Image (cartoon, rainbow, N blue to C red; front, side):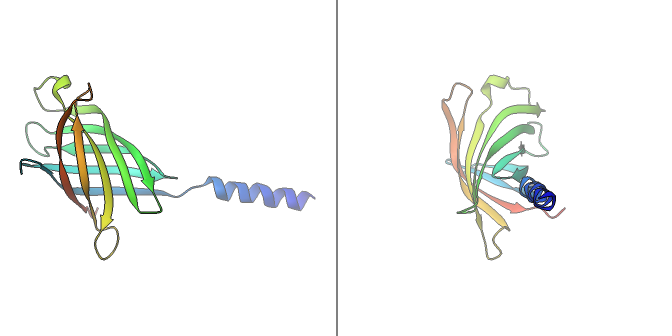
Length: 142
């Protein structure tokens, strides 16, 4: 009986230790008016839950770091992510004028995780849409 109890405890420990995966991707957001914006995402995924941050307007006077949260759908290897708040910015613009991105990402390419592509919409804090378009992001090697 004692051995059965020990095996059950060990099995529970194995199930509780879910694998965490880290992602770092860099690329561009292409707005509907064909303006491109540099963009990167850096996040961890564990048991389908995603948290991390995004960088917009990289290495410019308006570079902004935003909190990123979302869900990973293992079945179709896709993500649904959204920026939830501004963590830091170099911009002089008032925070209520920032556009928060909601995106749907899917892995593309021959090797399955080299590239993320999809569409996005952007919303002001009052939920008014402020942007839309598509993006392409490539895995950063570091």
